[in-house]
Length: 112
Length: 115
Image 1 (tube, chains in turn green, yellow):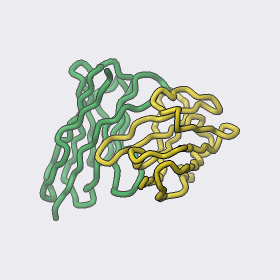
Image 2 (cartoon, rainbow over the protein chains, first blue to last red):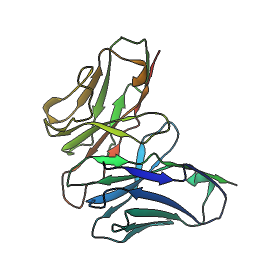
Image 3 (cartoon, chains in turn yellow, brown):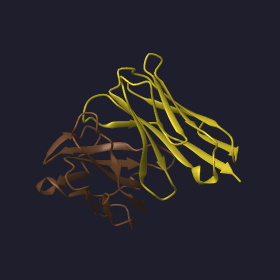
Image 4 (tube, rainbow over the protein chains, first blue to last red):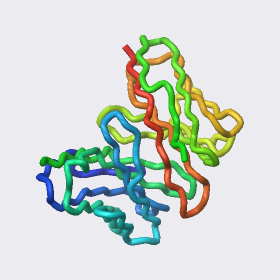
């Protein structure tokens, strides 16, 4: 069964810290992996998409890495800010145009 | 570029009633998805359309849920009759069908409460 797991479920850090969110998937034959942000009561905003042939993607203070062989991805957030507080979701896709399979998310709180 | 539009934003109904949700995807996006997100969980795909056709509806409870995509653009998702466990946020998303450009763009969702 293809499953995605995110640990921890919740994380609280002081402003300015660098932090890492983890995502693991049971079937390593992924097509691509996508990280999303979800603010309370809102839809999902795409942060980064990594193709299966890539090792990492960067956007501003965000860096996502992918290790297919071990079935893991990490989202690194540098110099965290209170505005980064949200739920972060990882999702994998197993074929072109296919559905996304989501993890349950990590709820991040960055304290001023 | 306008985003994915959904309506209504909130809906409260009694169990066994019917409800319908509407989605307008980003212009030019061939693929449309409906997801169900239960509180504290990640979204789960209910149905995926490619233009007018259904690509994947394996997790759609077909005894009570139905969906259609009109002329390959707008889509409606219906629940009839609703159960308590249908309380969730229903998210619509759309994407292009181009290799290397498959980012899914999500609407704000419809929050459903079944009493």
